[in-house]
Image (cartoon, rainbow, N blue to C red; front, side, top):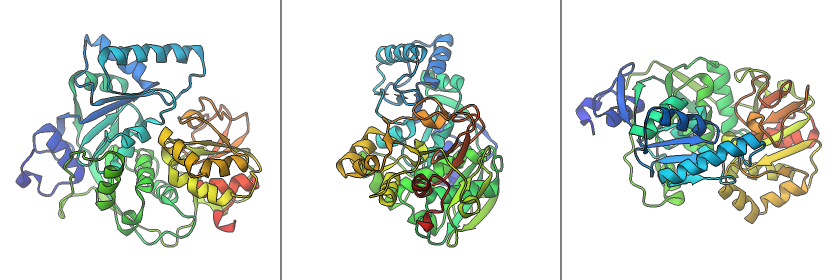
Length: 422
């Protein structure tokens, strides 16, 4: 642990990377840091293991701190995918990987959080760009490539350039049918897709404090969409109570920025008058007010992904569609088995199915255009996921990104609808 005197005037990222490297670290320094936990999924683990073996490594640094999650093409949609997954299953057994989550367990970022692998004050890496999701718990969490994850698997360490930090302050009370997804879309539209390249975000303010943990996970999840390395929300009582509920008696040491910490810039966003937001094709930062594109025809609605596939999201969708029938094909994918079971036990799933939605097993499928919801040429989808690049869900599809409430209202009408009008 770096002494408190050396921690003075530091951001959360600087403190966590100082602690992980055992040396005082400032923005733009390079440090060799010890990782708390590492994750790869069925897509990236294949490349990671190949690199691991090419390095001549024979055993992982700590089988209890590595998570392998099958979620991107799970269940396998092709013989090739099934064969590759078989090879990774064999590797995890040989290595004694404790946290192997096979088909149906859920999306990697939700699973990592539910199983207590990302904790306040820790350094967590994942071979997936949306690993920044864990920043909602107060961790420095970031995505890395296959070669980097192989290095972590072998040694438990990795070189990092300490990022500068952009401080974001959110103020105001969110209105009905306006959620964390609308807030982060507003931020992305304001900053731009490369507006925080290789910076860390620290998100503060009364709005942030009011957000549920599920909402905070949504905000941190999309930090990468402005180019950020991490999206950190300082842990508070809500954070600690959430961790105690999901995985009791875990030990961790939260990190907080000093009052005089140095930030690259600050962005203040008042959300009291914010309405539902939507990212239009084909850029994540092409953000408009939903009411400005209302009436646009939609062929498919997708509710799920690591951004908005949690219980809170399905509760809101169910409340809007209850007793109604969707007008277009509507695909629902819970982010984990735990979310799926809770939706079953509380009647949410029954409500969604009765409204005409199709429910698929937990995973990423439709989000990346792998299966369970690929678009036909010229079709448009309103999705609660995080990316809408050309070809994302189909070679010639159009993807709009919005909140669960907007998705539910749109599903009922077959065209983009401001949920406040339902």
